[in-house]
Amino acid sequence: MPDETPCSIASPAAHTRIVDLTTAHLAIVTGGRLALVAAFRIIYPLQPFLTDELNVDLRTVSALITVQLAASMLSPLGGAMADTRGERATMSSGLAIFALGTALCALSPSFVAFLIGYALVGLAVALYQPAAQAYLAARTPYARRGWALGVFETSWALGALLGVAPLMQLVQTTQRSAPAFWSLSLAGLASLALVWALLPDGSSNLRTTTRRIDWRALRTREALLALLFVALTLCAYDLIQIVLAPWLRQTLAVNEAQLGQLFALAGIGELIGALGVALLGDRLGIRRTTAAGFLLAAACVAALPFVGQEWLWLLPVYVLLYLSFEYAIVAAFPLVSAVAPSARGTMLALSAAAIGAGRVVASLVATSLWLTFGIGWTAAVTAAILCASLLCLLVVKPRE
Image 1 (cartoon, rainbow, N blue to C red):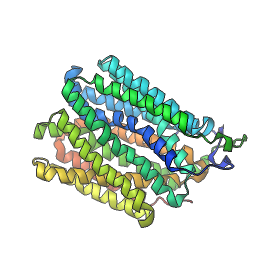
Image 2 (spheres, helix red, strand yellow):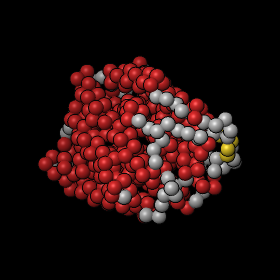
Image 3 (cartoon, one colour):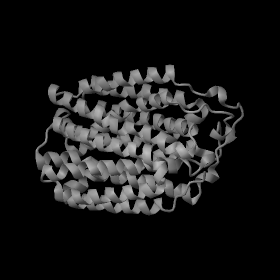
Image 4 (cartoon, rainbow, N blue to C red):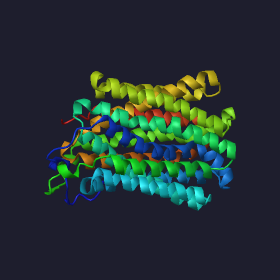
């Protein structure tokens, strides 16, 4: 966690009135995340291709994931900027940095350039994600927050379905990664224009007075367990996510286009999961359905080593894995947003940092774990971490 010395910033509680969220605003915020998600996710199936293009080994290529995730841990900066400079300005800054990072990857296809480019992508996510979540949460009552954040999180699935899949086909066709990254950079610039031109920032609804961050609310048992919960969850997610592409290439000899198609299937499953939260999460209960989603995800992970030799068995388990993971993760965001209402922006930023920390740990050990012990042990460790995160979830309760 960051230094707990109190600092004076504009607090969400200092709002006199916030304009209600409209469908158009939700669409702009969600659409603004699509390019970021596509770049963030394409590095996973692109790893085997980059080992040849950059002339490095798989362990070295996995450093691209590590540096991206490490940079995303700067999300408290995004939360602070959202509170002091406004959510729209922070989201715009993230998109501008993203366009620069992906252009760097396209211009100089060397490992060093990719490393710097993906550090910028991670920083862009760190700025955009908490600012966007805070923007939506502050304008939506808790009873409807599952719907708003569920729709927002469809961008994670759509990034794979509409971004990763066609971009991987482009890589397969051209046998170069540069065209894919030029496409991502242009998409980032288009999103920047939409966010800045059409999204109201609500700054006229803020008082000029400021207040201190409520660190006491962030030190409660529920807040700390919520942070541990999201860290463990995304650590488990990336442990299996990082090794899926090289494992499937080894066992089923898939090419880049086929890996893109698999990510499209994953995107379909995730889209169903995110829409499930939007449509059913508030009605069925956030905590109950989140727990069910994690149990199902753990079962799917445990089944992967047994179904991975045949497409007929692998595909339904693969889709169900991403569906259950996405439902559980998305359903958890409304809960996290309500753990410390007096410091909501900072709590969401800290949760993004915790997510980054969990994913960094996974990126450092996943490839070595798989290469040394195989998919069976990797799946077992992943399932065990999911069960531990579920125990944390059962203790966390909303305060609004």
